[in-house]
Length: 272
Ligand SMILES: [Fe+2]
Ligand SMILES: [Fe+2]
Image (cartoon, rainbow, N blue to C red; front, side, top):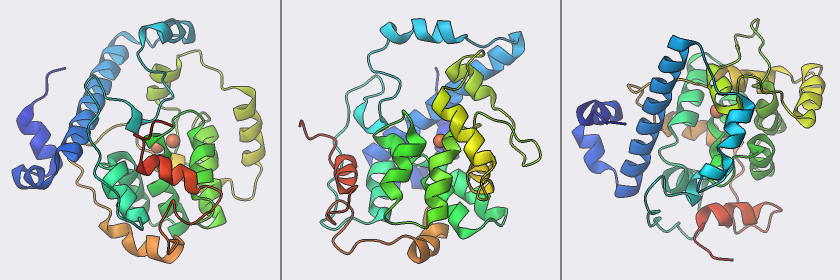
């Protein structure tokens, strides 16, 4: 896909902003821009002819890929070699992970910004901010992986919302303002049926008193990329401070049951 250089720079906030970004952040931003641009082009084409791939067609593509579809973003070179990651500080905080490993984190920042603007609870805003960050190391079953990563540090409602947004996104709830996205017809196949564990989870969550927590994550989940959106972690620093129990030893050093997950995100280059 051809990249309109001027539009790309403008989407990031101008030449000065791009100049202040390091190589890694720029590469990530470019990838986001290209992927989303490509998604938009594919979506337009498919909408024009009214077609989406089938499950069988997507299945047939498995052997044409160099990596499996569930692999986390930190482990793939996106058609190029992977880049050197900046070292993490000795006692890394959530903010450090956002800046050094999740960046540009456009999708989750846009989701959290929408939740903030629409006056949602701080637990939901935090859930929106965190909901897909696990995709840096794992995409498969990312709701469960993500909830596990954050469970020791965030309110129970936030964990619940992160874990179950994965299942709810397959089920429309027009009353809540959530329609099944075309993106999933494209990504999973037009005839896709969620597996039994997702169907069972949906049934359970649909009748749970906290149903709206993960539902609101799906409502704030944005499936179309806004290239003009200028997003930052700054509006969320206070919410993180109030609700994220930052371990004093640093994430990955606190001997929690999930410390190894943080260490893997910090150092995906470790061979074993
Ligand atoms: Fe997600
Ligand atoms: Fe998402």
